[in-house]
Length: 344
Image (cartoon, rainbow, N blue to C red; front, side, top):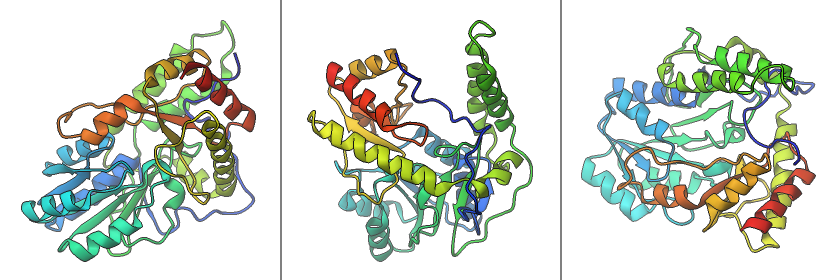
């Protein structure tokens, strides 16, 4: 059947390089990506800039849950087929609601938002731009005209937690209280690495992962774990990035031979978190991959606002995120392509 592809990273054995990577130097570090966003929006609220938050109509529900936790009004602007802002719709909404905070998302680590950010700064009066790099953590050090950029470390690296904020113009608070959810993820990873056939059921460590995930929304005002702060600077970031590029390049070429393309173009310089494809029979293909121990996620299941999330609803029905991270080889990419071809 082949090895398991997908699931949580093994962060008990981080692959470290020979030198400090500098990824988070000069950044503020919090418990998670959503905690990082909470700190940004809370700071802006305290500064009197909380009149409205403009969100794309394709996003993870954790983003608007942060707005709700802070009692900040929000609405959704349209995203086009290239996963970029509909500028006419956005400008109309912004001017009608009287300005505020604008969130752009770098989807899958392959949708560079800088042209949109520059346009927004030039055309939307007094706008504050927040760039969501949760799916593009390798870009947190890339120069941007956004007022804030934030990301999540655990989405791409073998770490149990960690959210990072970079800002040129604002001073964010320092948080020291440890989060509560990472201990469950660390314990789950420990059990996962010690499991033996018949020794204990996989549900034991999966339950711990689930408990940690469920607690993340309760940890908006907490810090990253000592494990993460000790290991992030030593990780071999270039190795992780290069493996993703190599796997993504091979996967894209192989998919093109069976008539499937990523839903947006992927530049050779990008470091994809996943390769997103659109399939009419997505659920059939996904089940076939599951049967072969390949656990591909969907970005994102709809958990509310169905009428407003036009792009989000379409993607929830058709999008499949193909895994290309450092744990896997070209042979693993071939295996995915073969199963997709047989079941598409």
